[in-house]
Structures are given as structure tokens and as C-alpha cells.
Image (cartoon, rainbow, N blue to C red; front, side, top):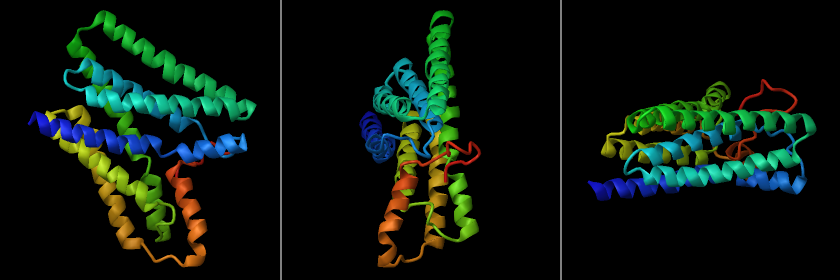
Length: 243
């Protein structure tokens, strides 16, 4: 049983690592253009916060080093992403990003960890870190819902590329199995939900997929990269959400 836990933990590290790496092309594009253009920092600030709490959970809970390791890697990447925003964003977005990152990624997690470490025992620390990780993961897994709605309304998978949907599906499945093997509800609930949403995305893809003409290939590939690497909230319109 312990070997199965380790195998699925390693597989989870691989799939989650791919998810964390998915915005890399976007940030290379930002560095090359020296502008954040229409990209928004909020998703990366929230993902950094989520990674922090999973690292904390993996540290305080016994035999959870694989949870801490991949999210430590993810936290390092998200820090780089946020720093790139701070360097290349327009002054107004730079100021907002700095404030949000300071509050959400420094003050809030630092205060939470400090208070629980000083005033509560290890069991409470595990429950607090696990609950916060669960909550932020549920928010992250629900983000493709708007893309799924667009697929149903337009009857087209143009805005929901297969590759990322498949990776999220596999990631949810692997961590759900890991959670069952380790009897960990904090990991199982958000990843089980992610597995169900990933399955729904693949079903929608099968229902609405249509062959693409070769003349559209380049534009479609660019669109897939744009969705996969999270062109999210327009800097000019804060109401625009991820597709």
C-alpha cells in the first residue's frame, strides 16, 4: 500500500507540475514584448496562495512530502510569474499587483501560519492548512466552468483546448486515487471535484468537436496556447473572466 501511495504521489507530482508550467509561454511572451498586455495577475496571486497552503499542509501532515514538494515547485514558479507582472505591468496594474500580492501572499499566509504554530497543536494545524488548501483548490478547479458554458452556448470547443482539459482530468484522477489510498479528504474532495469537471469537459469536447481545416490551423493553435496559458482578465475590463 505504501508503494502505491508513493507511485500515485509521483504521478501527481508530474501532472501538477505540468499544470504549474502551463503559463510559461505566456510569461515568455510578456518578457519578449515587455508588456503584460491584456493579462491579469490575480489568477497567479491566488495560485501562489493555494500553493503556499498545500506546502504547509504537506509539511505539517506526516508522510505528505510529495504534496509539499510539487507545490513548493509550483510556489517558486508562481513567484516568478508575479515578479514578471511587477516588472512589466503598467503603473496602475503594478500597484494593484503589489498590494494584492503583499496582502494575499505575504500577510495572510504568514499570519495564519504564525498564529496556528504559536497557539495550536499539530492536529489543528493539519486541519486548518488542509481546509484552506481545499477551499482554494475548489476555486481553482471551478475556473473552467465559464469555458464549459461557452462551449454549450456556441456548440464549439474553440475556447476549450483538449490538451489542458485532458491534463486537468488526469491530474484530478491521480490525486483522487492518492487521496483514497491515504484516506485524505482534504486532497480527495477538491481533486474528486476536479476529476468530475474534467470528465465533463472531455464529454463536451467529444460532443462538440469538429474537424478543423488546415487553413485555420495556425490561428487555432494560437488560440489554444492563449487559453492554455491563461489569458484571463482584461486590464481595461475587470469583469472579463477566464475563458
